Image (cartoon, rainbow, N blue to C red; front, side, top):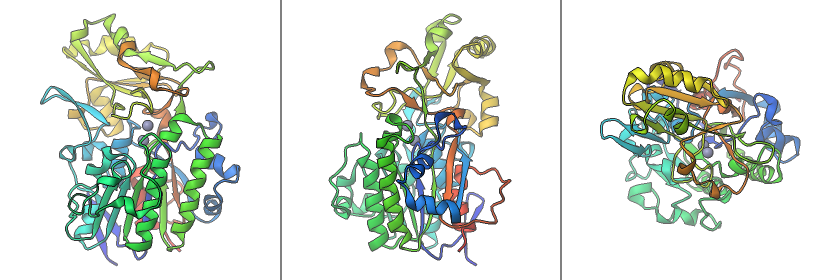
Amino acid sequence: MRYVTCNNRKYRWPDRPVVVICLDGSEPGYPLSDGGGYIDRAIENGRMPYLASIKNRGLFRTADATIPSFTNPNNISIVTGTPPVIHGISGNFFYDLGSDAEVMMNDPALLRVGTIFKAFQDQGARIAVITAKDKLRRMLGHELDFEQGSAICFSAEKCQLTTQSENGIDDADQLTDLPPPDVYSGALSEYVFSTGLKLLDTWAPDILYLSTSDYIQHKHGPGTPAADAFYSMIDHHLIKMQAHDAVIALTADHGMKAKHDSAGQPNIVYLKPLIEELLASDRFRIILPITDPYVVHHGALGGFATIYLADPADVQPVCHKLSAQKGIELVLEGPLACERFSLPPDRVGHIVVISSAESVLGHSQQYHDLSALSEPLRSHGGLSEQRVPFILNRPASQLLASTTLRNYDIFDAALNHATG
Ligand code: ZN
Ligand code: ZN
């Protein structure tokens, strides 16, 4: 048996195409307070017949995502098979102490390990990676050799700008008849599936990784017509992928919860005014690692924040103050949070704050533009969005029911455990 090693994990060489899908924001409905999850509700409503059939013969479980339950740290966990303390990506956004700057975490220079894709390409595998948003592309494609003709990596967002030297393919927009999608649309994810399927048909990747956008999930709850239509689109593509005898593995980067009251107003805990009751505003810095250029989704309001203090002696009183606040589930000192959530200590502040399931954390009222939110707020980032689906279209009987799964075990499950 041939194996490839990456970050101290061994993966079996695939003898058929392996398709791993990160279905952004696919809340599995856990605990069952939100009326169930996207996939289960779509199955119930008869919109995912293929996944309904997998429920009986494949692996249908849930797993834990990485905290913070945001897109970048979880995608990078999935494609490296490691937690953030190893790969270094602690959010979509972080405070770089070295340069005293708040920076986006989309630069591969911030990655501390190689990807499973690179390890397989080095051994001769053909790799195709398609992401909805361009913010992930350079990290997912880190160190891939695009000159050899054995790797492709592009985003649906920038599908019209692909080149052989940067993406391993010229004119990726020619892969499908679909028009180039708007970045704020469910069509962005459909584009990912459509082009992925075309590559499976024509280019024969050994490993295909698809990462979608959570535009639909930020706006629509499980079982709603818009959500069901989106998951039905996915099911149609999965059926066609199955025709290639592919191993299909499906997980998510995080769940998604309603964060508003019965009148549709967002439940926001603004941190700045609370801390200002104890400290002058130049004595602390609040980082909201959900922040990314796509604010229409969520207004930069998520369930996780980290706070840097000018004087570490202020940690205790600030922790005490925030712990007593309604809408906050957990306040931890930085080192304890890093230990509990396997985060990189040099990229986390003195304090970590996590909101409750029905709330989000904000900086201050002026900081957030809520006018872009056209629907009542749904978001993620905390412990309440940590559960994600973990699905294989084949049995994996060696994966014991007692094993706690992480979403970053999905390549292990697909390559080492899928049978039949
Ligand atoms: Zn996401
Ligand atoms: Zn999101």
